[in-house]
Length: 212
Image (tube, rainbow, N blue to C red; front, side, top):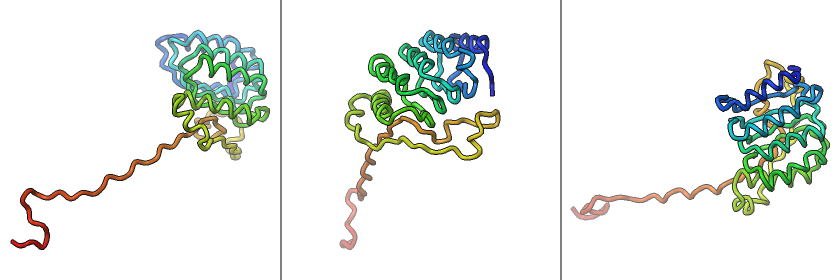
């Protein structure tokens, strides 16, 4: 575990605001962000780094984030057009906190495509469905989203195995490969019909069985 103090989070915030920072993925899982009061600082950085940051994946799982902290993050997302994947697994926020994401996705954010919510047990299925439809629009555009609104939804609730239930550690690799509960609609495109077999004959060639 990494216990980030306010000073540590401020250093991360400065890094995100640097236009030369190539960071695309940031994993702050189990960093005690709620205890340090660091979410507000980090949210401000996420908001102000809109035009310079290359960050596309952000993990804030296992930080005991409540409704107040989630509202801070959502407020930042309303001004961010780079982040594509947000991992909020194993936190304690409720519908009340996440509800603000609906208006954010409707009015200002068109880049977030994937939201991970495994073991966020206080979130209702109804809210997940509402958010899912909006993520579908971000991922595929409004026209395709409307045509595929009733497509099969992948919201799987896989339990962690014994090796991954032991919190985050240095030898544990990317949680993105664990098949977590993920709000992301997969649209399948019908396969193209195979081309018809055709026979090409040389000009002037006699058909099989013809006279020589």
